[in-house]
Length: 205
Image (cartoon, rainbow, N blue to C red; front, top):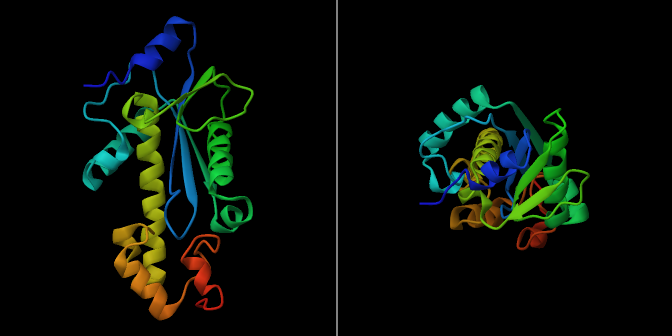
């Protein structure tokens, strides 16, 4: 069992008080924004079962989302849309989303724990591979980011039900790909992604 409090505990012992955990969701989908979250938890925060959002059921994520929102000291969200992703590439867009999420907490952080991605910011950082399964703060951020982006996909699904976004969340499943071949793409699809790029001239109104 991973000690999810290890990194936070070490930072508290070094005198850090406000520790942000940062994670993103949406690098792989063919449509929509990439969403990042930065969550600052109180020192005594405990939530049994909290881990990488991908390992949680949707019901559990939604429950944890409400608890985290209620208990967190601060939460920041960063959203970078498909136009910017196409302009700068998904790696750079993810960094922008993460940096925006940190800024949008509205507080000055002592340290930031980040899931994998290195960030060049004026706050000390620690990048942790698979951090969403190793740090309670990053795990909390992964839940906030995941639920936030999923809600965006549910809204988009109401406008474009043929792509089955409420189930695939924008990933290139067979049903999503079949719909692209049949109907073309929306203005929210990422034109820099293959095979979306093959349908640039077939955009739905």
